[in-house]
Length: 270
Image 1 (cartoon, rainbow, N blue to C red):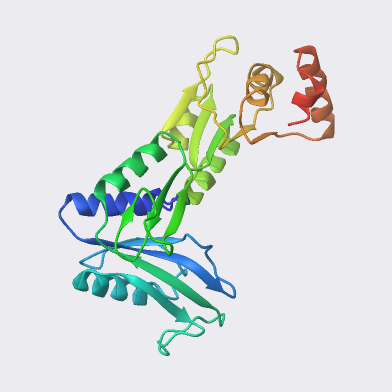
Image 2 (tube, rainbow, N blue to C red):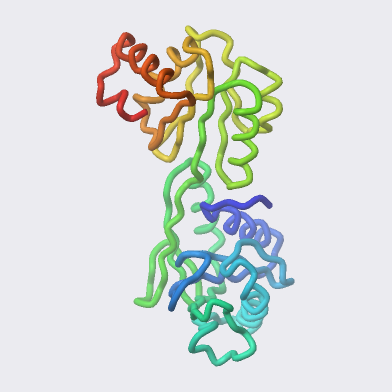
């Protein structure tokens, strides 16, 4: 399972195991005393056989967390465990000298997890409240930890050749969604993306999936494709729009966009 910074990989693992009839626990990082490679909200899902998804400490604590999760499932109750500084477990230390509190949750609500996954698939943010006993859509105790999940970053990139295919590889490794646009079918195939758009004509371009968690990138060295795509990108809800080229190219691009009727405030987004 590839890395998914949205946390969807952890939810997917949990739901898949639960649908097979296995018991699953969640471990959630709820407090950091010092420094940590992961922020609060980092999670793992652990099945009763020790299978797991996600990461909390980049390898320092995962084995101890898996063992504790299996014990929590066996006794039917979770709780908060301190590891590292201030922990009673002297044999489980963090090299950085920090301490972390991990919330273990058992007796999970499969429907709540399924609904959260569906929201992420529809690129909608969603929250789940975790506590020692269970997880539900709303916190029921003051010490519950609410985990907010955001859809994965999507990169919408248009171009040719290695600039496009290498960016696709980096995006996949980082756990981002990638939508490739190109007139080159070979490049689209090499991107191995779930979303590809063949650019047959600069005057006839199909709808491009861009939302507020999308970054749009122009990798062309051809102004005609930029003329067709740049206005769409700049007028979209994308949080970032970029294009390759030096200062001379950037100046020429700006003049082209002015001629296309874009306002300076729109062009300044680039």
